[in-house]
Amino acid sequence: MALKAFTNNNSVELDDGSGNIIYIPKTSFDFNADGGGQYTLFNNHKKEESRSAAFGDITDSGGTPIGTEAQVITLLTGFSPAGGSSPAEYAEFHLTTTPEVVALNDDGVTYTKIPNMVLPIGNGFSVTTGTLKYEGTGGTFLINGVSDLEVNKATGICYALFVNGSEVPGEVTPHGFTNQSKIENISITAIGVLATNDLIEIRARTDASAMTVTITVAKLDVTFFQVA
Picture 1 (tube, rainbow, N blue to C red):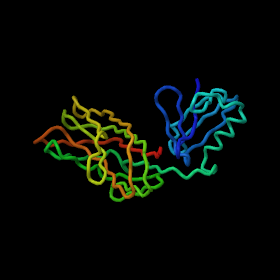
Picture 2: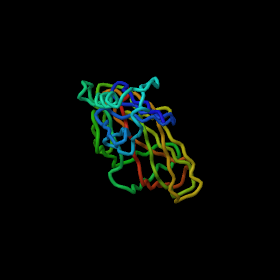
Picture 3: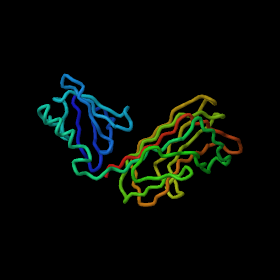
Picture 4: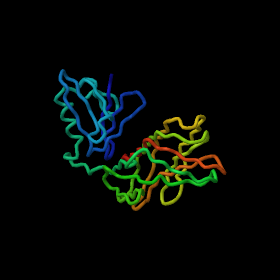
């Protein structure tokens, strides 16, 4: 199967044609020679983000094969920051401990901040009391979010990305829980623009009003990768 491997500003893009393109910061990109002409390209900080292919199946962005195995190795080696590219800005923003129990506002409208979010890995970001601060020069980011959670009532739950205290339009994940106390998965992929000193929070709300709703978050990971 053909694998497109190419750089786009500060990221390496891996596209195997499945529709699930992987964006890896150049500072996190690496590859292994698996033997027999096979190669695995991966994110050093998230090893599950990887693609494997024979060297003859690795192509440029237009689908043209790179060429010989030596030419493929030269290409992949050149993807690293040592080639002169500036380091990509990125953040892995997630809960420090799980499960995290959060009581939501009972008016069915107001969002509640998810506390205890931390930044174990990042470049161009910092975190204070669960709020992510962007300290870079500005850019466009690929944003991936995934969460496993359960709710104590059968109701609708919505996560949202807030920047500088305001909900970002389109960056929300409405999800209806028909069964209480059953763990379900919510995910979102989006493109967003960040400016210097933007403050970022993950918040949640319920559709229900006049009732006590709590969520138990088993997992909450949000990643930001600069793509332009």
